[in-house]
Amino acid sequence: MATLSVIAEQKGSEPSRFISGPAIVLYIATAVLVLQLATANRYGYFGDEMYHMACGEHMARGYVDQPPLIAVFAWLTRHLFGTSVFAIRLFPAMASFVLVWLTGLLARELGGGRFAQWLAALCSACAGVYLILGHLFTMNVFEPLPWMGCAYVVIRIVKTGDQRLWLWFGVLAGIGLENKYSMAVFGFAVVVGLVLTPQRKAFASPWIWIAGAIAFAVFLPNLLWNVQHHFPFLELMRNIKASGRDLAFTPLGYLKAQVFLMTPVTFPVWLLGGLYFFLWESGKPFRALGWAFVTVLVVLILAHGKDYYASPVYPMMFAGGAEAFLRYQARLPFQIQPDEKSMLMEPMPHYYSWCFGWEEMVQAVAKAYAMVPPEERPDTAIFANDFAAAGAIDIIGPTYGLPKAIGGHQSYWLWGPRNYTGQTVIVLGSTPEREARNFREVTVVAELHNPYAPPWENRPVLLCRSPKNFHTVQEIWPKVKHWD
Image 1 (cartoon, helix red, strand yellow):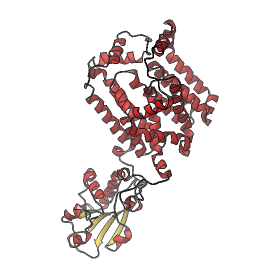
Image 2 (image 1 turned 30 degrees about the vertical axis):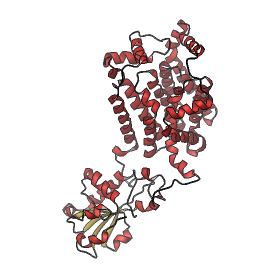
Image 3 (image 1 turned 60 degrees about the vertical axis):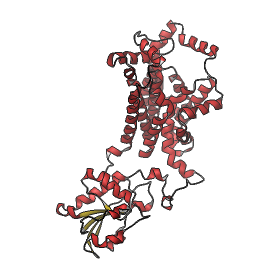
């Protein structure tokens, strides 16, 4: 089947901001926000939520079982939104939005394109543990944000070499410690990652040490409160351990629990994240984050932490895994079996590859249409050699002032050529040589470069004038029928 599935970036033009990687990430994040808000009233108050709201009425520098940040959110919730079930779940829903957006941003910073960005964001959006935590007013819903904010800072430091960015790491780590003490686990894990990689050079700079001082300064009020109250959190942890309240996991059991918590369908992506940081050349500069992930798991397994304690670290693995997706597929010792021969040359599964390039194709056609004198445009046909390209013109084209497409493929042939004479035709899915047999004047308006499409789907947009062998399109319509 000769198709015109198209098209990536047109030379000299910017992709529409509405279908860019960051835009698609925002759509996914917004969908999660809407879902959380739509279901916020589905059940009544969760026990922890009522306790946290009560903490907000007793503002202090610390509490027996948590740092003070959740009480700050409780105070704000009470005074801004009220204390209804819906009201206290507004901040968690917003945190869910930010987490999905931040995951896409991490993928972008790791070098991922549009596909990697939305895949990473979608994994965060679909991870069961995040969907659950985003529904509850607890510290856990806010926990991934400083963790992944710190991961973002590390990536920026690696990319720019600007060691001063460690100051932001210190600020975020300090805020994280005021939310939940487990921030210390991630901080320690990052230090281990730095020591085990060339990024250990950071320790020769004063900025990382200043960052540590900043984190300590932000955390100091709660530390002093703990000293004053004889570290009630440690006493609580000892009592919980002595009571045997928590389930104990074997190392393998803990890893199995991770698969189910993050939703099994996302497992290949975060597993690829590990491969990306440790095996792929493009991930090598960021290997400290790979070691940080491993360290988090090791520490929590040894400490017999709860299974969801590791959940804040996974967005960066989704980001790395999404960036590595196509590279992974290329290295497989087997090929994913396609459904059609035309799919054999597509670099990714067909259900992904046919999602790219349509906006860029329509932009290229709009460029060709703009080259036609205004008086000729009512008689200018847009002929597409496959139904997908024609459908893209019909759906997206009106935004650019384009008329509906015609074509010989499938039902488009039945719908006919309308009243076009064929004196001017914009052709998709053909070659200049082929159309030169039919028209006296053939102009290549735009070269198409979709890296996810097979070669024949990257044929140029052609502006064809003055037909040689026919006077009207209706005369040749029976010959353009293309059903396959």
